[in-house]
Amino acid sequence: MIEPGHIYKLPHLETDGHEILTFIRRSSDAVDYGNGEHPGTNTQEVIRALIDRSEFLYNIIPNDETLDAIYHLRMALYCYEARAWRRKQTKLNKKAGRHSADIRHHGANQDVPFTKSNAGQPVRTVT
Image (spheres, helix red, strand yellow):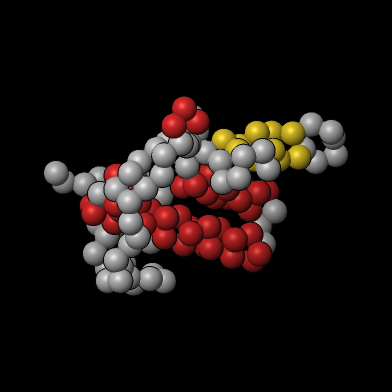
């Protein structure tokens, strides 16, 4: 890890090389990074890549463990997308504070405008 929570150095397998995984770092009322902001990806995009990679591997050598991993990655993606949607609706990303006590947990997200099966698609909201 190079920068906790934001930049990771991932080792190559069978070589001394590495890849850098960078998550976006931007300020809000909840946290101020000053001049330390930088572009990057988010967790959902990484999970989408992991799902794609897992489906690719499953098509080469099908097995139950890979199917289980795909299922759980899709559920993680759904949870992150539901979290992002709810935070956007309440503008929680723009202000300090925590989720209120009425936020649902562990899959009881009946108010989000997508389902577990289509959570990988871009969120479309009506404004």
